[in-house]
Structures are given as C-alpha cells and as structure tokens.
Image (cartoon, helix red, strand yellow):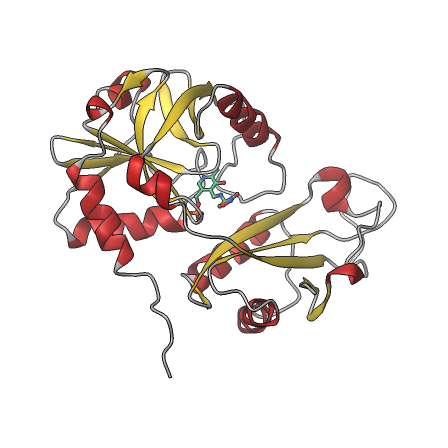
Length: 283
Ligand code: DCS
C-alpha cells in the first residue's frame, strides 16, 4: 500500500482526492518541487525546501507550516513508502473555493499534497548521452517560479519525444534559455557556460551543485547565455536536473556534439557529482 502527503499528515493514497474547485486544478495556481532520494536519504532537501518557500512568496501564497515541519513530513513520506532510490513530488495550491480569479479569503487553506516513487538512476543516459532538439521558448516571463503551469514545458517535451529526443532545448529567438525540465550547460575551451539565473530560467538545484562541482575540479564558470549557434559549436553539452543529474547531450537536431562522444569534462563533472550522493547507511 502506498502513502501520500496530505497537508500535515501522511495518509493512504486513496485518501487523496482532487476537489474540482481546487485552484491548482482550475488555474494551475500553485507551485511544486521534486527531490531525489538516494539510499533512503533526501538529496539537497534544504535547498529544494528553500526554493519551495521562495516560489510561494513570489506568487503571494503563505505556506502554513515551518520549513522544519515540512522537512519532517517529507522524511516521513519517504519512510512510509520505504523508498530506497527514487524521488518525491510535492505541491501546494491556493486551496479550493468557488472559481474566481481573485485570491480566496484568508479562511481558505492552501492544499499540500505529495507522493514518493521508487525510480532508478538514468544510468544508460548518463553513460551514453542523449539527443536533443531546439524548440522555441513560448513560456511566460517568470520561469524562476516553479509553477504548476507547465503547458509550455509539456508541449516542448512532447515535440522532443515525437522527434525521438530526450529533451527540448528552449530558445527565445537565438538565445538558449534552458531545457523543458532541465538546465542547459555548454563547455568550450575549458570554460563552463550556462544561462544566468534570472526570470527566464528556473534556478536549478542541480545547476547549483554542478557549479560547485566545476569549482572543485577547476573548471572556470561563465553564467552567460549562449546562442543556438554557439551551443552547437560547444565541445560538450549537458542537460541537468534532479532526476536527469548530469546528462550529456551528444546530438542536437541531427548535429553531433564532440563527434557524438561524451566529453572528458562531462565525465569529470559526473564523477564529482557522484561524490556528493549520500552513501547507504550501514549500521
Ligand atoms: N528547469 C526547469 C524548467 C525544470 O522544470 C527543472 C526541474 C530544472 C530546470 C532543474 O531543476 P532542479 O535541478 O532543481 O531539478 N524539473 C523537475 C521536474 O519537473 N521533474 O524533475 C525535476
């Protein structure tokens, strides 16, 4: 039997039902997070929880729990489902009330839900690399908010999927922003490039871990946007996220990156990233 998070309780999955008046359901009026579980432990949980509260603040939603309480609940969710390796998903909406664009009154409580799934690491992709395709970035101008509104991302990812690609690399005009559910990195002449963390991208937690890894392996960083042409000319390209980790891109729209081989810097970043993964707890 599976267990879910419902507000401040861990309940049987069946207890969580959607209210048709929930603003998350009707407007996408809410925010979410995905946290990776390695060996039963939440990875970079504080960073994800901080971003959850920051996204909430940006949409003027007050989370009715302390960060500490939420952390505890997420831990209980992992334990209840006996997750070894996988991830948790959780979201909060502005609550359920008669449909009206205007915010509900203060007595309408936000709705927090969460689930945990067992999932293995994307080993094949990490080893061999993936194909990507360019898709115009038609999303709104607050991509820094981890909003439940994912239509722009869904349409882009579906287009990539139908072209046999793992990821859609988004661009506004000629400028690369990020992937549909990942951050994009390029490495050229021993320098790591990625879009600056502004309103046009989500400031990925994995992105932050990779920037730390880069410093640790003496790979200089430039938080500078790349054009499509520049990305195609990179020595190495990476897409990164909580679930994708450090995924090499070896081909974009049929054009090979590094002759279709995973590059050395990517391998070094992957190895450095691996040192940060929580080890199994041995008693
Ligand atoms: N950019 C976008 C648009 C994302 O949706 C994500 C994460 C990222 C970047 C990378 O952020 P993290 O490194 O913090 O994961 N997308 C989540 C998702 O929807 N599934 O897995 C992660």
